[in-house]
Length: 386
Length: 245
Image (cartoon, rainbow over the protein chains, first blue to last red):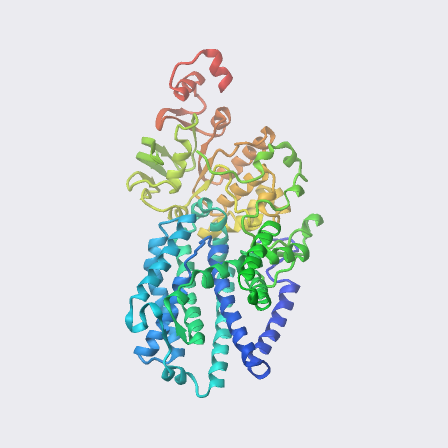
C-alpha cells in the first residue's frame, strides 16, 4: 500500500473504530465483572446471549463472507454437546479441558463432511448440510449409553467437578461463554483482516474471476468451514454444559441453532461483523418481551424478518452504516487527506462488507463522459456467457 | 521459430454436454500477440477458459514455458503467470476499485505492475479508486479488469472480448492502452469479435470454426475473403460478407 508518492495516507482504522475499541474495552471490563453486579438470572441470560452471538458470528463468516449458506450448523452444536457429555461421563475429563478436545474433534469430523457437502452448490449445499445434521441427530439417538432418543443429564459428580459451590460454577460458565464469544469475534476479525479475508470477499462476489486471479477457492472455503465447525462445536459444548441435559431433538434442533441464528444475522446485517451483534441484541430484546405470547412471538419474528429483508436488505447495521458512514471493526481500507479530486474523498470511505451490492448508488455514476457514451446495460456485471 | 511460450496439444474441451473444442493445436512465442477470431460458438472463449484452467482439460494438452499445465487448477495456472481478463469483466461488486486491483496481486509474482503503474496506465482509476468497482462506467470497469489481471505480473495475458458492449470511442481508448501492456514483453491472446481490430493489434491470428482451426496466418497479410470463408465455413456472397466484417 505504500507505493504512492502522493501525500495521502491509506489507513484501515477511523475515529469511530478507535472510539469503538476504547469503549469496547470498557464494556468488556464491565462484562467480566458482571458476576459482582448482575443477578443469577441475568448472568444466565447474558451467557446465552454470548453463545448466540458466537453462533451468529460464525454463521455470518460462512454465509456472509464465504458464501456457504449452511442450514446444518446444528450438526456441530449437537455434536459438541454430546461430545462434552461423553468425554466427561466416560473418560472422566474435566469439563473445561474437554472443551479443548471438543474443538479438535469438531474440526476433524468436519473434514469428511466438508469433502461431502462441498460437492454441492447453492441451494443443494444448504439442503445437503441439513441432511448431514439429521444424520447426526439420528445417529446420536441410537447411542443408548447417552440416553438414546430421550437423552441424558450430566451426572452430579461431573457438575460438581467443575467448581466447588453453585455460585462458582455459574460464574465459571458465564466467564467461559464470555471468553468464547471474544475468541470467536477475534478469530473472525483477524481472519477477515488477513489476506485470506479479501480473497474471501472476492470469492463471494465472483468465483470465476477469483479463481483466475490465483485464489484457491476450494481450499479457502474449506478452511472457513473447518474453523467454523470447530468453534461451533465448542459453542455447542458450552450450551449443553449450561443446560446440564441433552437430547437429540434439543441438540440437533434446526430451529434453535440455525433458524434463529439466520434471523439474527439477516436482521443485523449479513456480511458485516457488527451485524450479528446488533441482531443478537434485537433478537434477545424481542424474545424477552414477546416470548410469553407463544405462537404470536414466532409470527412477530417472521414479520420482523420479512420487513427487514424488504426494507433494509443490508440489515439494521446496513442502515446505520449508510447513514453515518461508520465501521467499528476496521476491515476496509480508507483514505485520508487525498491530494486528488476533492469530490472523491467524501465518498472514499466505503466499507467492504456488503453482500452483492451491485445496486449501490448507480445514480451517482455518469460523472464522466465515458459513462454517458456507453450502453447502459454494461453498468452491471453480466452473467458469464459463451 | 524459438521455443513457444504456450502450446496446446490436441486440446479438447466441453461446454456442458457439448464438445466445444476438437483437437486444437496452437502456438504462441514469447512476446507475441495473437488474435483468436471466429463466429459465436466457435469455441473462442472456451479456448481461453481452458488455458486459464476454468475449463477442465487433461495433462499434456497445454504446455506453458515448458511446464505441463493441462491438468492444473485455475489458481495454480494464475500462479504460473497466466492472467485472464474475463468476458463481461467479472469484477468483485462489493470491493472498491483499489481492492479489486489488490486482489490481482495475490499471486505475489514480482514485476513492474503494481498499483502505481496501473494508475499510470489508466489515470481515471486513480481518481475513482475508492468507488465500488461496479459503480464505474463500462469502459472504466474494463480498465479495472485489465489492471487487475496486470497486477499479477503475468507473462501471458488473455483478453476475452474486451470491447464487448462498449462504445466505439471507449474501445479505441482501451486498445490504445494495449501497446503499453505488451511492450513490456508480455505475450497476449486476444479474443475479439471485431476482426479488423483484432488483426490490427496482433501479429498472427487463428480463425476458429466449430472448435477447430479453420485458418491461421499473419495478421498483416490476411485476406478478408479467406477469413470470411473460414469464419462462416461456406463461400458467401461478396456483398454479404463485406457487410459482416
